[in-house]
Image 1 (tube, rainbow, N blue to C red):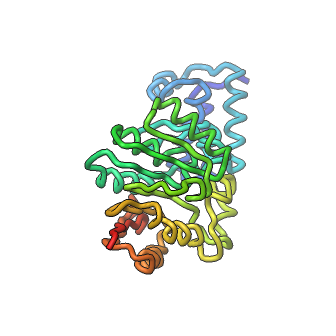
Image 2 (image 1 turned 135 degrees about the vertical axis):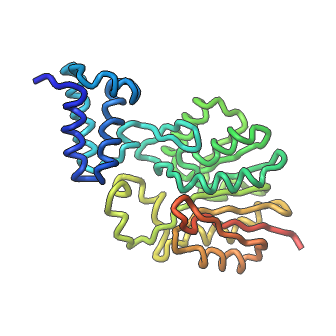
Image 3 (image 1 turned 180 degrees about the vertical axis):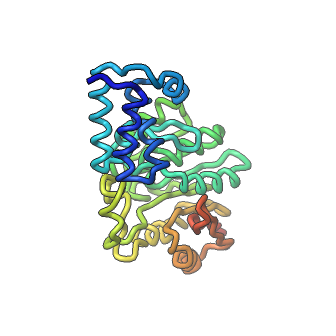
Length: 282
């Protein structure tokens, strides 16, 4: 039976409201139908009474069922907007989140001149590409231990035509030998291995290696802070995203490693999210 745009959206909203809050259900229904029909939101509003072709209805229903099973919208669409950039995402990568924009903003504030920048665990390339886009005179090296993630990052780099980004296969600093940088940034895994949230919501579909880091969630952060001094130029900065309840622990790790000017920044939800510190050679 043929349905109009309005009817499809209403049915989808009702079903999605069992998964997400009503306000989000309405937005997600529109996003999925816009993607199916390759139109914008204004078109949906102007053509509410238009009958949707049967093939498109079937395609929309298929996408809706995937979402109702819990699959993240970003994986269904195959992309996510981050810091003004449209980035491809796959199940090989963590989904870029607005909270991580706090890290990008903090890094951009330190780029007063062309710098050598390193992004550890780049995933989709979100942080590295955002920095390269907004600081075109700087050179950005982005590494990841996942070859699948690097393929996605390379696709995004190519689409954005950013020639000031180099992608390398590396587990943290392992392939960087004696290379040193002025700024190192990372959104590493920081969830506790036993955290129940790993089996809930979008996290169920994202790569565990990009989420969990040992019993206390600090295993990778601890390794990065310990090894970073060997890859930072004098006066260089290390900036790390972390869990909302990890700021004090991360600050302590910085102090133990000998970093100075330690500072924690809050994200859009007013949670302590990014801690940065400077490496000064005595």
